[in-house]
Length: 288
Image (cartoon, rainbow, N blue to C red; front, side):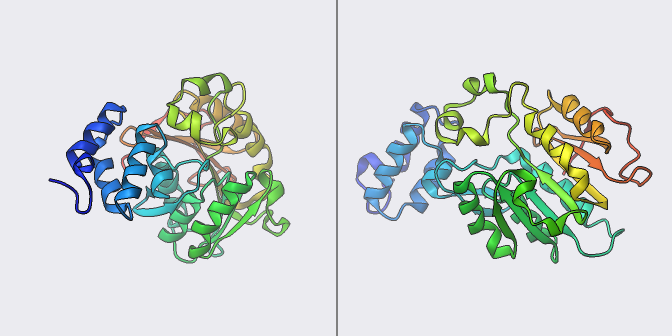
């Protein structure tokens, strides 16, 4: 049936056909979103044209769905991936374990849109959230998502962006730093390599450049019960775990096949329940 207020070329079926021809795997779902969200026929026609030319749907809509909420997005800012849900789930689990007193300070480092930090803050009332990114556009975008949940956003290079008063007090340091090896960026989907900022993707020659930098500085910022959580790939998990172990943290690795997500967790205190895993331990399945 024709969409209300549109001409025949903008029927649901026609839009689905155009999206399929452009290679959109979830053409029906995307067509429904474009139709519902477009403010009018002219905008819908423009949006369909932008999507079939390869622009990410999230930039067209101005938001991405993540952890059951809408995350505001601006062009070039890293689009939250479904696999990053595992990073949020693990962080929330650590904060809700009930073994540690307040304050529950959370840092979302390399925050991009602030999706991770905002999701954690929504699910853990009372958490004190701080987020940081080196990209001015990302920090600007993050303020739109982190501000409403009571968090603060800083612009700068990793730990240099954070208030010195947080040193030694961070309960959860959640990190989704770039981990795509430089030479592998050319193999990424066009939506990512052509539209997302290079600074949000490039993890250096082996993809572990930022993991090394984060792990090296983490112990100065973690509380005695704190944890460092780093999203990585299944292929790079052993390398990330080695980096975190070399920084003096006890390591475990969590894997969710359902989400296709992998998170390396480093505990500040050897001997605690979270810190007894052997560094570079095997990847375990999680079913959030």
